[in-house]
Every structure is written in structure tokens, then in C-alpha cells.
Picture 1 (cartoon, rainbow, N blue to C red):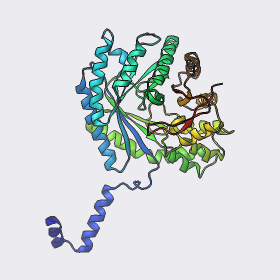
Picture 2 (tube, rainbow, N blue to C red):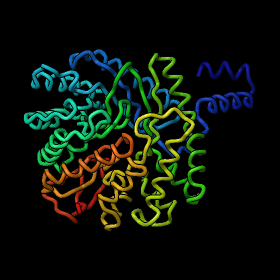
Picture 3 (spheres, rainbow, N blue to C red):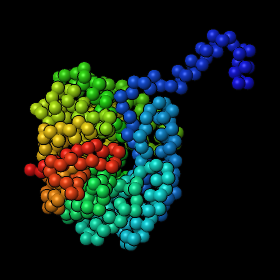
Picture 4 (tube, one colour):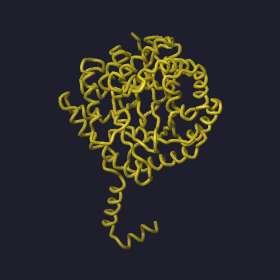
Amino acid sequence: MIMLERMRKVFSMRQLIAIVLLVLIMVVPENLESQDFRIRTITAGVTIESLADTGTISQAIEFLERAKLVYVERGYVVQTIRISTQNLHQLTLGEPRDQSLQFLKEIDQMLAARNVSMAIGGLLLADHYDANLVGWVRSLVEETSQINFSLAIASPQRGIHHRSIKMAAEICRALSTHSKGGEANFRFTASANCPAGIPFFPAAFHEGENSFAIGLESPNLLTKVFAQSTLHNAKENLMREMESQLEPIQELAVQIGNDLKWKYDGIDTSPAPGLDASIGKAIETLTGRPFGSATTLAACSIITDAIKNLKLKTCGYSGLMLPVIEDKVLAQRAAEGRYTLEELLLFSSVSGTGLDVVPIAGDTPVETIEAIYHDVAALSLKYAGKALSVRLFPIPGKKVGEVVHFDNPYLTTATVMKLE
């Protein structure tokens, strides 16, 4: 009030109003009301000395909170902040698992207190099997809430990892039977040829110096563009709009990296969906037909061609995600029988990031899950090391065609899908 009275003595009321408006224009970004996307995650990748190295993790949290604040002050919505480390198997060689679990529990408490999640990458070396791992994983998901993990089932160097596929299938079934609704599988994926630096979980892991990347939730932007596009010009229209809206995101990231001395890896341009941001709706807006109909494959290809060729620094998948139980339209079309799991894999051949959160029957045999992993691994290798991952959701007590409701607020009601 004192400052305002002093300003009144110096400036007229009209001048004072003009100054206030100028300040508001400088503080509030022009696109605050017109944003068609959210920042799903800012993910910091760190190399820690050991699982006892909580100092590095604490520094990463502080960096993420400062980076998030920069975006929030510019009017952007930042949904999550996350950390990825090097693969767990690099940190646990020769170390008792009970001790590793205790360290992870302590880290988890740090993360939960600051609302941060973390990915610890691959649990085992490539193409290894460990009969004791299933029990350890059960304890991990029961005693932590923020830790995500994976197993690599294919790599360019070693091809298909048959032992890892067996291990991953057993973990998938165990997580299904030892968590309500099988929801623990939300924190686990089998990954094929996934590189370091993916900002999305649970496939994320880190290599090298500390760095960070951005992940997006942008299906509403795609829907807006496709409402004014055809199959002939959709790619060009989408590229133009995404570059226009994401360049400020990139500029801020470069500034953050320079100011805070963190390497910037890029934006994963994958249009990750949410319950109010459907990639299924975006595709249907472009094709004019229900997802799964003819031209769905063409639309998937158009989207991927666009997001992989943006004039931006990109990283991670930068592909099309089709997570069935995270997208209301995809879940509805699956319930209507308009597409199958096999067709989802077909879409991945031209565009996608694999099979993501697909609801299957709780009594699906481990051998069937292994077979699906083999198909994804083979597809990944066929297309020159294409990054694919698999999150299957065997739903305990549910059979094909039955409806399932989830407690997780990020998952939508779905129908258990049939496996051909």
C-alpha cells in the first residue's frame, strides 16, 4: 500500500494502469489460455555412485524443482518430475539383494516426500535369468511406491534375449497376482532396443553425464490440427503447429541447462495421452472413422512421420503411443471389438512405441505372455533396432470381455481383450 501511494504521487492513474498492464503482459505468456498440450514430465538422468548415493538424487530433485518452476512461471502445466539412473544391474553386482532393497526403500521415501518418481532401468544383465528375482520384485512393489523398472528383451548387439523374455513373463504374471487389479504392472515394462535417455517411464534409464529431457502430453494439439486437415496435408500442418508451439519449450530448456549446468537431451515428441487428452480421438478426427477402421494405420504413420521430423532437438521414443487403458477412446473402441492386440502390434510396425497397458485375462499362461514378448522383440529387430516396449496387464479374476475398473486415477475403465 505504501508503495502504491508513492507511485500515485509520481504517476497519473492512467499511467499507473498502463504500467500494471505492461507488467502483466511481461509475466503471463501469450499462449497461457490457448495451450493445447501439457508437459507430462521433466526427467533428470543421473549416474549415481551406488544405491547409497542419496546426495546425487537429492541434487537431481532440487534441479527438477527449479526447472519446473521456470516452466510454471511461464504458464505451462508440468504434470510430473522424474529421475532415471543407470541400470540397476550395474549397481548391484555382488551386492546382496536384501541390502539393495533396503537402499531403494530409503530412496523411495525421499522421492515420495517430494512427489518425484524414479526409474532404475534394467534389473538384470542382457539375456540373464534369475529364479530369485520374482520374489525380490514382489517385495520391491509392495514396499515402495515411486520406483519403476524394466528388463531388456532385445538389443542390436545380442538379438532376442530369450532368457530375459522368460524372466519378464514371470515377473508380469507375479505382479498381476500380487497387486489389486494387477496395477503393479504399471511400473514394469519389457523393453526392446530402447535407448538411454527416454523421459517416459518405466522404460527409462540413464547413461553418461547428468542430463534432462522433456516429455509431452499433446493429443489435444493433434486433434485441433486434424480438425482442419486431410490425410493429404495433415503431416505438414502438424509439423508446422508443433514446431511453433514447442520451440518456446526448447528455448527454455536450453536456458535452464545453461543456467543450472545440466546437459539438455531434447524433447520426446511422443504425444502421450491422458484421460482428457485422447490420441484415439485425434486419429478419429483425422480419419473420420472409429479407431481400428481402415485408414487408422495410415493416420498412425502420418503422425509418426511428423513427430520424428520436427526441426527440434528430439530424444527418446518420439513415436506414437497407444496405451489402451490410459485413453478413453482407445479403451472404448477395444470394448467394441474394433481392433485386436495383434493389430496394435501392426500399428507399431509403422509408428508406435509397442504394446502399452493392454488388459488381458488374468489366467493368461506365462507361455502366451512370452510369445507376445517374442513378437515385439522380433519386430523391433526387423526394423533396424526400433525402440519398442511392452506393458501387459493380466487382470486377476477377469476373463475376456469382462469389464475392469481401476483404482489408479490415470487409468480408465476397460474391457479385457482377447488374444488370438
